Length: 355
Ligand SMILES: *Cc1c(COP(=O)(O)O)cnc(C)c1O
Image 1 (tube, protein in one colour):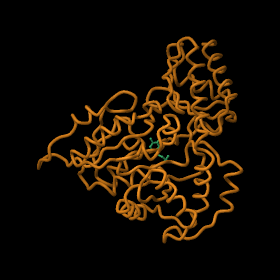
Image 2: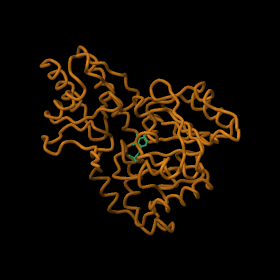
Image 3: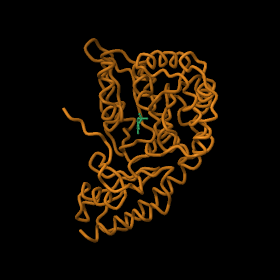
C-alpha cells in the first residue's frame, strides 16, 4: 500500500509564496541564536532548565497548575485523551475535528475511544447540539467522558469560538460529568484576534495546549497544560508514546523566543489574510469565506476553474496551497508578506482570466 506524502510536487518550480500551512514557517536567525544559547539538561528526568522555563511560562499563560512540552500538537491531543479516557469511552467533537480526521486514527488505535461527531457551522457545534448528543449513563451506552473543541476551528475556516459559547459548553460538560479539552493549535491566533487573554479563553477547560510549530515559527513542539495530576498522567503517556526527550531545551528556547517575539505579530498574519480574502472576493466567480484569523478558504469553481486546477496553476507560478475538505485553504504566517499576498491575488486573477 502506497501512502501519498502531503507535500508539494518536487519537480515543480521553486516555491516563492508558501500559503500551504503555517507549519511551513522556518526559525528566524534570531530564534536560531536563542536556540544556540539555550541551557540544557536531561528533559526526561526534569533537568532541562529551558524546557522547565517554557512549561512554567505556558502554565502561567493558560492559568493552569502545570504544563509539559510535547514533540507535537498531535501528541498533545493523543496524550490528553489517553490520560482522560478508558477503552470504550466516548469523546464528543465537531465532525471536522483534527482528532477525527488527521491524527492517523490514534484515538481509536491507541485508546480504543469512539468519537461522536457533532455538527454545526464553521467547525463549531452549538451548545444545543452538544446537549442533544448527551445521553444518560446506562449499562448499554458508552460512557461519555470528554468533549473537545478547536480554538481556532481549522477546517471551519480558522474561526474563533466565542467566549460565551465556550463557557456554555463547559457548563453543560460539568453538569454531565464530562472533562473538557481545548485543541489550541491556533489558540493564540484566537486570543490576538479577539483581545481575550489566553488565560480567560481557557478558563474552565481541564486541558488546553498551544502549538509552537505553526504561526509562532518554532521548528517543533506543543505545550499542554492542566492540573498537576493531569499533567502527571500526560507525562506517563508521553513516555509510553516515546515522546520523552533529552536536551529539548534547544527546541524549548525557540518556543520561549516565539512567546516573546512572535505572538503580537500574529495580527499581521490576520491583516494579510483579510487582504487576501478582499482581493479574491473582487475576482468574479471566486467564493471566499471571510477570515477571522490566518486561514482563508475559497472556491474558484464559479469562475470556471476547479480547485485542483487553480492549485496546479498557482504552483507553476511559484505559489503553493492545498485543498482541504473540498475548498482551497490559504494560510498566512510569519514567512508571508503583504507583497506576497498582492502577488498571489494577481496570479489568481490571471488564471481566472485565462480560463
Ligand atoms: C495542526 C493541528 C494539530 C496538530 O498539530 P501538529 O503540531 O501538527 O501535530 C491539531 N489540531 C489542529 C486544529 C491543528 O490545526
